[in-house]
Length: 103
Image (cartoon, rainbow, N blue to C red; front, side, top):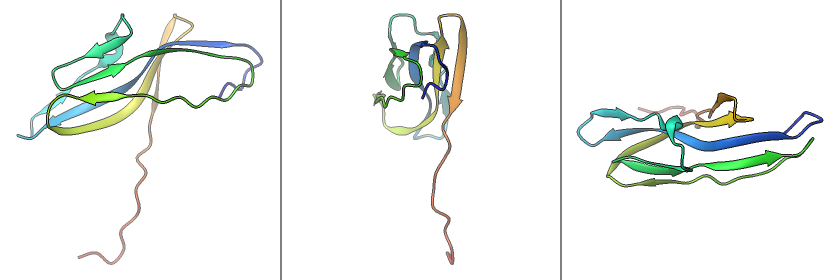
């Protein structure tokens, strides 16, 4: 959502992920360094997008991550470059049900 009365240009909008292999070694990748529109690692691949939000516009976008290896892939946040000047990041909240009366 763009709450401003001016257009906002977001470039290199992509998911930021952490990959955990099956042997409990953490392999965290910072995929903010991709320049060609996609980032590819041994464990997963993400695609980045360029988005222009008009004044007071609300859009829904789908983002994709393709796992290449077996393991746990956690999506942590969405990273973007605002007007090709500064990097920004929006953390994604973890939403889960509370468990009651569990043993």
